[in-house]
Image (cartoon, rainbow, N blue to C red):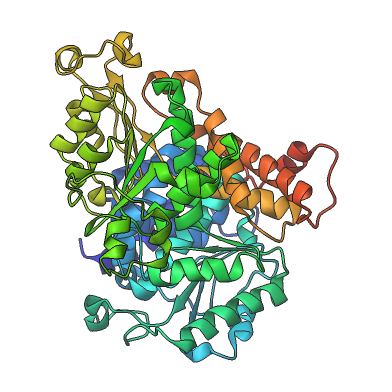
Length: 565
């Protein structure tokens, strides 16, 4: 079915799904159908769709016509619906966003705002066009690095829309207080530039002074219009801008970068929780990253900060047990001495290597450095090869294998591969969801010597954990909003990670997962929000008077779609 036909059908299908309570003289059906029953109808219709993109378009139609119904469906079926609303399906939705976009007559909460270069000097006026006036949370992207898919330009609007849906569903932030924004400065994606349907600026990306002016004007306009405690989440910016934008604004504005900091928090939580399987403390791990961009360096920085916080050593000292591999091999002191100009964010990890052993490939680095944890953030699929995983498992009883790149097509290996190649002994986590894996008992017993493996006496079923940022950023946002915090710090990310790790129970660990089930995500978000808000009061960044019972107060502020608890 063509995309245009799918989009048209989405609106027609709303008639069968979004019937609201009727009363005399409304012209609506006489049956008073509860929202929960309407939600079950939506779910039934959703399951009838033949592709995930059709499901995405259908749900977007629901969101545009009946917001409570949309969120009731997501809240009550989060494990099934989240992969449609966000990763992995949102990647495909962004690639097709111009084709499936139905232009509203005026800006709406469902369509968000597009701020482009022509708006320089009048960004505040653009914000004035948005129907919600009490905005507390904004997700903004310039579309340059959408998931692992690269430059999607204005089509990247799917990301802020999806992220904010998770803020509302997973942490109960009121949908009337959120704002998705795309900063459209052009695109270097030739397919977009040639596409007659493309909704963005048809020009190459602006890289100069005008770009910085537009971002600065937006940040200042947000603070002026919505207040110092309005949370700005920077999302899917390219490496060349992401780090410097975060560094520029994090000390003066209420903001964070989810790719750098949110990803780091959720991955750190998984590492901390993995001790229940491996018996290895965070401080005793040796980390090897495949990928040295925003996510890789962000995770590495937070790990180093956490080790420093736990042991009292310096962050620089903690970094010595963390190594990065980029497209040219191991990031090392030797490369700097050879005259290579490395990106600024990689320099803290240019360690001296006291060996002549090769380090040009990932397998070389595994052999030379003997890591206990292998973390993939490369957006290059199939890079955790059988040789690499087998070597990790030869070296350690329960190596951590985190294949985190999104969407699923970009994962460094699958859950099934990781478990089979390690004899079921690795601790696996991914960025996008993978189904549970049932291993043959013969494989578990004979492929590897499992004498010291904690799984030795347990089930042959593995339920891979998904290191989904949705475990942390909604709760962080809720805590910031509830306390009126004016800053978001690295300490908040560490607090969120530790809180999330505590929510991973022994029943989860026995199945191989280092994360709690997504069905508990609202409870997890509430606990993270409480811990983050507590830190805001301790740090003096809160602007709301501290309530007597902080958690009860935050819970009372959470949005619930009618009938959707």
